[in-house]
Every structure is written in C-alpha cells, then in structure tokens.
Length: 264
Image (cartoon, rainbow, N blue to C red; front, side):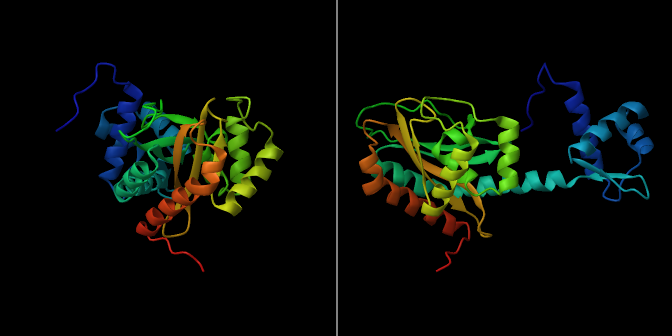
C-alpha cells in the first residue's frame, strides 16, 4: 500500500526523487536536456539538482557522453539497509535470550553519520527494579560517550576516527565523559584489545553499560550490542565476573550467523 502524500512534502526532495527514479529507468544514462523533459522541469533547475546529487554521490556523470547515471552512494546505502535488515532478523533471538538471562535492557546499534543509532531494543518484564531505559529504536547518541559507540570507534582507522572527531567533537555528557582526544584514543586501544567496552556513567548519570562488537563475513565491525542498566545494579564487579562474558558470547553468536569466522 502506498504512503499517503504528506501535506508538507518538500518540493526539492520530491524533484530529487523524480530524478533518481528516472535515472534508474535509463541504465544507459540520460542527458540533462532529455531528463528535464522527462520530469517536466526547466533545464537549469534540473542541472542544479543533478550537480548537488553528484556532489553527494547519489548521481554520477560520464565525462565523455555527459550523460548522468545513478551514483555508487545508492549501492552503499542499499547494502547498509540489507545488512541492517538481515542483522536484526539474525540477532533477534540472541538479543531476547540475553535480555532474559541478565534481566536487563539489551540494545543493538550501528554507526551512521558519525553517531550511533539504536536499531533494536529488548527489555524484559522480569526487570527486578521495574526501571525502563529512555532509549528508543531510531534515536541517536554521540559515539564516544557510550559503550556501543566506543567498541565501533575502536575499529575505525586513525583517519576515520580523526574525521569523526573533527566533525562531531567530544561533547561532555556527564562528569565521566572522555573529552580529550589523546585519552580517547588510548582508551579505544584497550577496548579493541579486550574485545568489549564499558560506559561507566559516561553518557547518562546513573546508567552503566557494557558492549561488544558484531562482525560480518568480512570481519568488519558492522554493529554493536550492549547490556544496560542502573549503575547500582550493573556494578563493576558484576561486569567483570559475568556480564562481559555474556555480551561477548552473544555478539560472537550473532557474528557467526552473519558469516564471521574466528581466526584461531
């Protein structure tokens, strides 16, 4: 069933969508002139839209024919979407099992536009305190201040990490947030070597989390999962004695379902 047309549909986005749809219907490419006729827009307007889409990678132009084609950014986004859909499906039973075992909230996130995005959240009715986490699927957080973000940052290259910090900075969320770049880099080396990360009330006062990365078939960290709860219950002792093993084992199970193979 088609979505109802919103009253506040942005014209530029609608026009960009028409362009992408038209390019998809012309795998051999299409000129600005022909495209403008096809979507019933002035040539100048069409060219401006194409230039913006090309700059962002959604459109590419053949330098010889000057024709326009769909850009490789769409392939990247399509692959990300498919991987996330597959990821949620494959991870669901393991996330539920972990939440039931620990009686705490379990999250799964991906790194998107230099922030973490919650793509799954599992809570159990057996939560001993009845406290509910404020997080929700689709919400975002700075990567440097939470456990799931740190395990994903730990797998970025030096260049990627520097770019992210330049763009987003290291905002202070609580008194415990790491806001010094050198300290963060040193911390991330430890996170990567030990295979898990801890958010010790760094993103939200009173909340402690432990997280581990999820790898795909190519061995790339594509997501992270965490166990989160009130700091008085998720003690440092409990994390070291029980929870770090639980979260790492669950992350590995999901990784293996995605085709990851451990190197012995």
